[in-house]
Picture 1: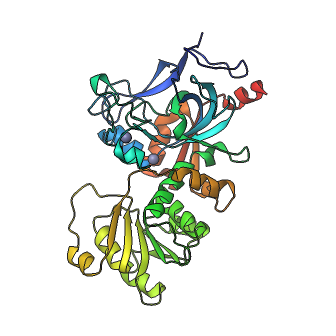
Picture 2 (picture 1 turned 90 degrees about the vertical axis):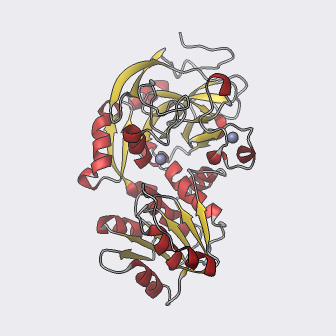
Picture 3 (picture 1 turned 135 degrees about the vertical axis):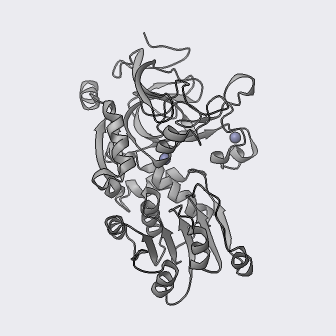
Length: 387
Ligand SMILES: [Zn+2]
Ligand SMILES: [Zn+2]
């Protein structure tokens, strides 16, 4: 029977001893297996995973390993379960946990951090100095589910209470998986200063973070918000999420187009979400003097950047990692207040057993896939039985 010292459970949410879990074998190889259902410790809960979205970073981890770090190295053949953009229901409470209740629907952010380093103390837990140190004699208790600890491509996972975000009943499972993506966009705008009402913003790259970056910038009152990219179908979704203008960079020089759309001037902020090799130099030419650029994506190779232009024009560059400073809570607040409809980027849903198909859709953008969500089978029946 499922139990642990000081752990609270409820007959309404029976927990099995074992669960289905996908694990990473060699690069690119996922295997469906069985694992024991993990037991929460102090400040942790057990989450029944009801839905999990696939992220480009999952594809990167599954094929190349980084940025996952398991026991100090690459995550292959270590019984590691990837997946990090999940939501679900709290079904067991670790000792002393009274911040959440059993049966409560939540979504998660990724990084719990170690809670004791300089950056964690500053709220920059995604830049924890003890990243991945959670094993053997270097155990600092760092958790980033799907990166340095087991993630969401399974039926249950344990989460630190600091990584939980409560969601309203009206928010669907699929929408809730998108909170962390909107949270990353919110973190980028937070690091740029946050007070973007009435300021001009360009978002480059209409991937999930870029599209929700448009939505968050508009919700924060930015104007105009201009989205650049190469795919008309995604640029169209950007317009539906509030972009004041879109630019297909296949048809027009991006920097010229931005200046044309902003009265001949550069903009105040650029949120770079494309990772294109020339993106940084283009971004610094899109901002006005003293403007700020947030880099939320990166190319794999080192690329030349126009440093002289950055220095002469007092331009600020920010790199962001993930979703720090509780940005997911602010993103969730916009979503639950229906300030934008994040579900416009959700395109496909598959069963957990069909994860390899779901990954193929996300990777090859089959049928114009943007966000692909995987749901554990039997979730609906489970919920009815509990009521
Ligand atoms: Zn992600
Ligand atoms: Zn830390």
